[in-house]
Amino acid sequence: MRLKTWKFWSDRLVDVASTTMFLILATSLMAQVAETGALAGTITDSSGATVANATVTATNAETGQIRTARTGADGSYRFDQLPPGSYVLKVEATGFKTLQILPTTVEINKTTVRDEALGTKEIGGEPTATPQENLPNAPSSTTAPSLSDLGLTPEQTQGNPKEQALLDKRTHMLKIHQRMGLITTIPLIATVILGPGAGGKSEGTAARDAHVALGALTGDLYGITAWYAIRAPRIKGAPKRGPIRFHEAMAWIHGPGMVLTPILGALAFEQKNNGERVHGIARAHGPVAIVTAGAFGAALLSVSVKF
Amino acid sequence: MKRFLIAFLLALSVFAQTDTQWVLQQSTLTYHVSHPLHQTDGVSHAAKGKGVCHAGQCDFLIAVPVKSFDSGDSNRDLHMLQVTRGAEFPMVMVRTRLPDSDSKAADIKADLEIQFAGQTVAYKQVPFKLEKQGAEIHVTGTIPCTLSDFKIEPPSLLTMQVKNEIPVRVDMIWHQQ
Image (cartoon, rainbow over all chains, first blue to last red; front, side):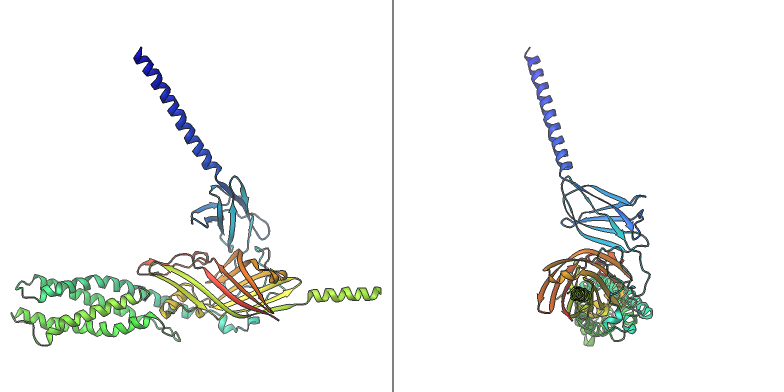
């Protein structure tokens, strides 16, 4: 009897707990659904024809959260269950100008409608004075000023593909220079760390051999790094300002240092192999290497961190 | 009397149609680039601009050479020039049309069409503040440009890319002629 009563009450307890859990979950879900809004619209071209397959991106201005949708055959798009807030809409479609609209407010339980018209993309050259149909307050063709009205000459406004090609080559080479410089840092640091062991009183040659091998690797990588900087095309008339001047000044220290260090190192290596203490000019190997590595590090930092 | 009235109305209509012009007198355009190791501003004072008003509407054109932006580091400026294809497309051009009455407002929202790096992008409802100073208007605001809008690959330093957002702060003084 007692067992039956206990079972009865335990069953009721389970029922109450289940119902409570269900109610909590349902309320939470309803709250989630209730606390969102929607954004929808139709994308057309300047003639009013719908634009299918356009990419519409909605970015929440506060959180940066991005939602993307594609327009259907009827040019329509829709974002459901958007948290309320301000959204930046971007519309992209092949053959049309990218359109960015800001800001669009989404409210709880409401569907914000943004119908937009895309303008046709112009291919290269100066934009014509034709009306930009996608903008409700676009310039009129009769009064819109042109570049010549601003006193700009064709020489100032015309592109120079040769110079662009030169800039592209320069950037490509300097990117390699930058990456090689970073890679060079690894064996350079290792070589410096192994330096005291290689030149110490130890009779063993393992540390010395490792130091020599890493030094040689550093030298090779440094050579490649330097080659890409030296061979990168110069742009005529471009003044030199800012950290690049310090970066280049440091090269006048670590460049000769990178030549001198292995020469002095070879002398020191020979002396050590002959069982002699490192003496004479070879003693400068360590200090020169330290100055060289320091200048290399400073050059690297000068273009990496804003002082 | 009737003739006088017609003449007066005609004169009024001609006056209303009269073109007025705005000339960009001073400008500071500043782009901001964020990198994990750097916060960089590139500044140009070389913008040229003109606004022509007709029948209550003003068409504006502002043009600025890409090369004129100075971030204080010539190497970075050359890199920016390369990624934005500044040698091929040397000018940034901004066009907008505003109602003449906007010149009396303190806050306006402008639809801009920006041609830059070989791309044309329209920004709608960009807010600007206007401050009237005699025959001059001081305009300030920020255009929320992004690199991806103009199909520009984000430049990288030490293998880390800069942020996509490159807001452009605008500070201009226009003079009415």
